[in-house]
Image (cartoon, rainbow, N blue to C red; front, side):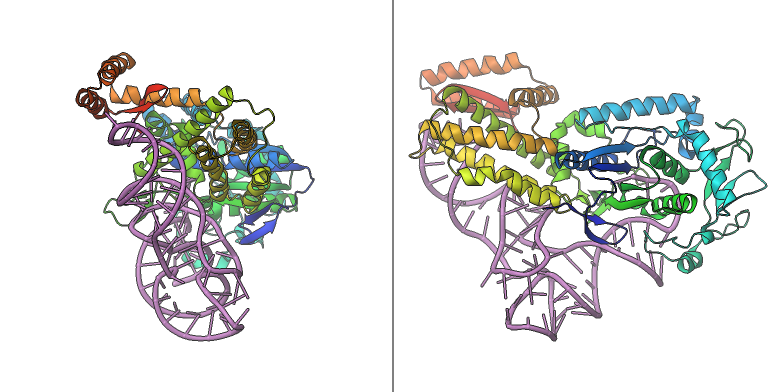
Length: 492
RNA sequence: GGCGCCGUGGCCAAGUGGUAAGGCAGAGGUCUGCAAAAUCUCCAUCACCGGUUCGAAUCCGGUCGGCGCCUCCA
């Protein structure tokens, strides 16, 4: 069994063979920190978090690097509008980003470099490109990459130079040799952040940042480079051109690109990409105000990473319900295990349960197929519920042994997906707390109504009992009667 | 115009050669005072046309439809 992953460079699935096993170097393009991150940004962070975890689960010694782009045109513009320094702006949004990632329960990458901390290395890198004839400085103090000088240009995106040149926009005032040449260094205008360089005061271009931060942390050649599919061209294409021209060595071996988050189109037909420029975006914190982080993760992981994900409130609700189902089942399992000993019991379906990790690996080894993995794991919650509701002829010890075995198998695998790592109490408590806040109702009020209802039920006053249940239902509270008594929860 | 992706039941979504996982919604049953929750059962021939093959959702060609990139973008 071996991991196979889809490589954008070759447009097909390939066996994953790291450069220096068991070490794996992975670089993922991070965010430009000039505003709160939206759900679209959560896609790669959530997905590469799972990839990071799965590689480690598979025994690799992974170094995961994800940068912060903290110097760029948009940052400068925004800081100017707000009348603050770019550093004040980026500090704020880096902190916000980290808070969002923590809310989502994502692991921190091993290295999270800031562009502004690598400027000397970038200057050196650019210098080497100029020396080798791959770049040139202009009179205005800009430095451009000479695209014609790199014969592999276009190999990632499947474009060729002639076509690109034919379609390129003509910029008359440009000092570039070719319209395809891109900026490595931009001369700064008065008032803008700047660094000293051999070409005058300025700042680095976008593409050079990632080439430098990746190779500085992972070496000139490394294993995996990831990001959104919109970065394939020109960003990643340019990274390859810079890096391979400079080092003469292959850059990243495997290119992994995630699909977009789509929103339902306004006219009801089809979907459109969620993006800042279209204005159809929700920030991560918007979503987390209304839904549990695991609902968002579950939604994302329910679609393969290379496909676009349809994002809607309805789907979020569905995901939330599903996560709640998983935690509630876990709660029921734990309750049963607390009351029944597994001593002397034998797991029912022992072979199937023993094969859970293998099945999981088969799914994940196939280009990180999380939808299939989730589907496989979820089936065992059904099995657990089945035993809990319809024990049949099975002994309590056998059932307890089965539940214990399922639990022991499932939880570590869900950890790879970053799901189900809280206790049922924590999850259900968090859910309830947030929902009650949203519904504007307090626990005391609910309990008071329930107390009345319990009295009515004891008196077999079903009319009053049902009336009170309706009252609670209208407030969004679900009532559930059982032998052990009445419990309530927020309507999913 | 160039490059690329996609089109599976009411909705979401796996499956890439051997006769369609899973979830949501829906129908019916069990449980319940009635409900809820849970569970059981039922519910598709894979956009269309042609081809290859003993056999295709799965490979090839074409048609129609949707989307992305080619400019900042996860």
